[in-house]
Length: 231
Image 1 (cartoon, rainbow, N blue to C red):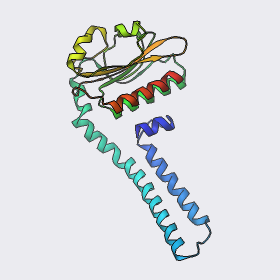
Image 2: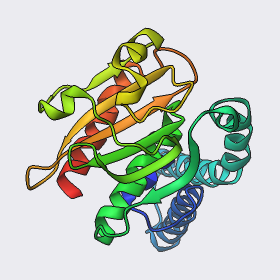
Image 3: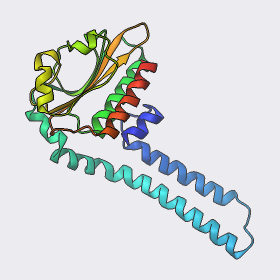
Image 4: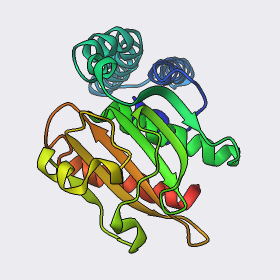
């Protein structure tokens, strides 16, 4: 649902309203189409039309049910998983921090991109940095509020850095990264903002090693590309 809302835009603060809105709107269109449609002649045609309308009605009902059941299921999963660990994690937990000097469209893009990554991966923290990684633009979750000084930022590194396990995290050094205590895995994606500014999209997790499979890394790269073009 976070991905759906990020795609449609930040028109509501409640991600669980999006599927309900689509379900109700779809049901209204379905009823209007049924009432305004011409009578169908032929048993086979009527049966096909009825089957199509039934499938559409089931889809609308499923969207509304997703909205109703999504919140308690998400809360249950969070209490047992990632969100259940953040109270014991090092660093500071914040629901959302945004640089209020940015234009509102840029703030909206940052808010929803970090929200999608925070809720759809096992991250305990997501942050976006600018000016070579020295200015915090946005963060969610558990974050250590000091700028990264990793060598690859200064050298114009283009490739993402995937610290897949504790050994990789230790090799880079805690003092060179804004990594909260207990981080077992991290993903850092370089950003190239207009005007030559270099930035970093940083995801951290204390849920275990190798928490960002290839598919999630590609998705995070796609969101990073979107941020480069819009922030």
